[in-house]
Image 1 (cartoon, helix red, strand yellow):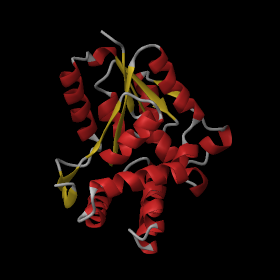
Image 2 (image 1 turned 180 degrees about the vertical axis):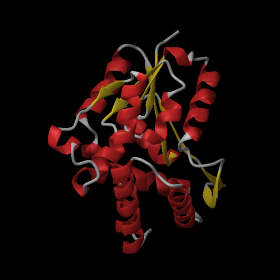
Image 3 (image 1 turned 60 degrees about the vertical axis):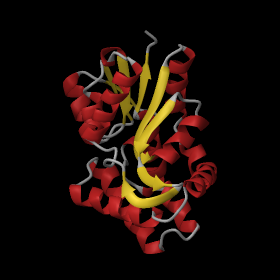
Image 4 (image 1 turned 120 degrees about the vertical axis):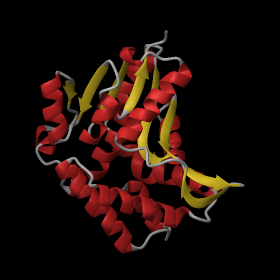
Length: 234
């Protein structure tokens, strides 16, 4: 949502487009689930704005938007969790449906090991308007994490995953330790049923009002950052 805000300010999107993104985010924060139609609509909108743009331009804009709209929205507790793993000599990966270019910026700014994100196809540094694979969302995150573990020689049973969304249950289910951070109602229920740890960095009042505009950006970005992978060195 905040990435879209920054792009709208730079005339990549119209005001009505931004309102649509905001409404989808409200529905997600209230219900904790994204319907198939919404995901496909978001995909089509993303592809329409990126076609013809250069990777260099998107990286530059992403850096600007992070500084303007995202840096101060990250929960301090989430940042501390990531740093705890890093200080212990463990690797921490950001796993998000966000474009991989923006994911890489967030990861680098937070000092994380790396990032996995949705990959837009580009030829000679120019986006074609097509994706490489699909959105990194839902079960796709679990597949991506398995592929990462295979590539890096990691034992997923010794890994920890964090998320705030029930959409990430597939990813949370493939690791040895799953933690629900600022969870939506559905994820909180699942975590309790499965005995997963629950951490909430919101105040009690905010936790009771998930979905209101005042916590949109913070919750969304915290979710993205928290949906990471922390690995013990083998």
